[in-house]
Image (cartoon, rainbow, N blue to C red; front, side, top):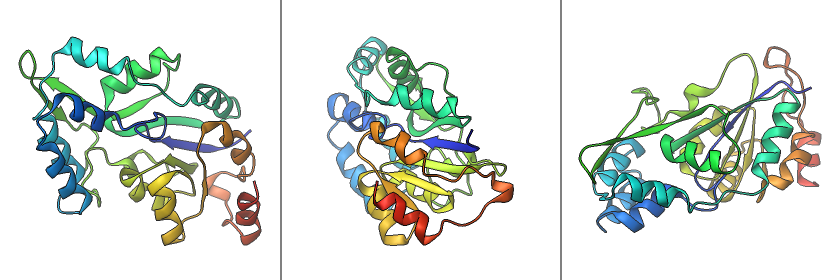
Length: 232
């Protein structure tokens, strides 16, 4: 049995694409891209970025639901969830994306019982929306819509699984990170204990290398442990 709490990103990690970016490309005024650049350059936080971008979306509920039904996930994600929970890990999907979309996409792929912490869409009229941030924090260092650091318990080791900028803050405080893409590069630059992956098919073997001790009785990752990950 393992005593880990898994905080797993959604967009670009469980899915192959960034769902919000795809919504904006399909349904929003093109000015959303200038707002995106402000966020990427660090001029604004993701909460402000998402608020301004989602206000540009024009889509009916049926159009959004139909769009969500086109989104594919990593086909090995459901089996990894079953594997990790079967070993005793707790598991949450924690995303700066849209709760309704995440729930619908996961349910379509038979993953329907996981806790989901994400932002929520609110309909303003027949094709206009705003986004609410029930998991935001004024103390969030990244000014995120969803402060992922709030989802990390003190009684377990924390494993972060992610791919991008919204995962960087929580990765810095995690006990270990399974990282893709920009998050992997960030971990390498900043000396954060991590293993790089491309598919959830790789993660059961990586999970088996993690120590099983609880957070109350832990030892740091040694150079030998890190070397084992590098040779998987």
